Length: 275
Length: 265
View (cartoon, rainbow over the protein chains, first blue to last red):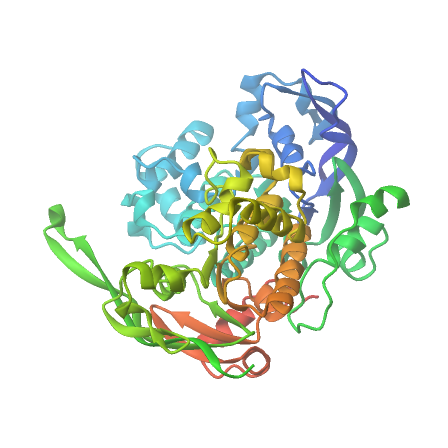
């Protein structure tokens, strides 16, 4: 497997409080054609990790450590150099498709922006590429002239996906892309992402708090707790044979479809003693 | 256990939406199309469906927060639509609601003690000292502290705020609680705590829940019976166990098949 991205000893702290470790010395690597899920509760540092890869951390925060993307050190690049990579070699999809799309521009225009900026496409070739992308994500071509508010939540997320894969990125970062969607729509979007990943041989970093989604889409799983990676492994190992007490506790909170399981809330005090 | 505490018969609610050029036309949207449900005393009835299926409209119509076009809602045999003024207020004490968004449903300018105690004040239940004692007792019951009564909502986490919302609903010792997606904004770990709390309180206070949710794992865990809604209509209803094991309608099957992680885990 070709390694696409590797993070080594990444630590993120607020500039004003360098002792508060929001992300604490984490290392991970992503390979082509594989989906890696980061799971954790709110505040565990999963989104910060994703943002730091893109160089999109808030100016209040500072990151230390190394992020290697195709033997390029992302942390040393200037903003301009990063811009050439963002949207081209690294695509990103966010949770809320309504707030990430511009309401006063047609979706076709917004998909086109990426193509013009990175590939310099214009005129007919641009139109053709937009049509191909819309077809790839399962949206009728006429929809290119629609505004975001004329689309359903699932369709908007498909538009976001079209934008993120427009330049055939090597890495796709998806930050809770299905959390705001209905289950049936969620199932469709997960399937679409999985197909695209396989067809384009992308590495996918998928952030979620839903173990059901992990079970559907992940190859590998990373569990984060209070800024640290507490467990990594293949999906089957982590879900069926969790090793770390936190992973076990988190899995005990997930209701099962058969309704047989007794839910057990996490006893944080006990966890701290165990660790 | 088996007698109905809340019953809705043939509820219809239409919304009119402006349409066409310049909004001169209008189209009718059937939010509720001949919906009938029965909630049994001490049990939990889940209402399941996708966005726009009419779940939340149903909840609001049951509590008389929205007027409906036709049909009736019976609470212990009493037709709620025929009540007004003081009589309706008296009944409302027994019909409470827990909301989805713990950030939007609490007034940021009120202290937690005031939020939880407001219902007691409105319904004029007990003296001031009794009301305060009740608020404190309820806060402790939902896992908060007496000192929290002096704090403001922003000082709490999402899960704690949902506990405040539950305390506010339960301090009036209601008979029916409508929970509109009470755990969907929460982390799984917090979700498990709140689900367990709701179950315990149901046993202690003999509550009947209407539980609105789109999460079919949560429904399987908490509900006894369920109603599946789609486009304002009831598609299927019955015992949760029966529907999960043997869904009759293709729409229900689709929903159940879409539960993430069903095949793999």
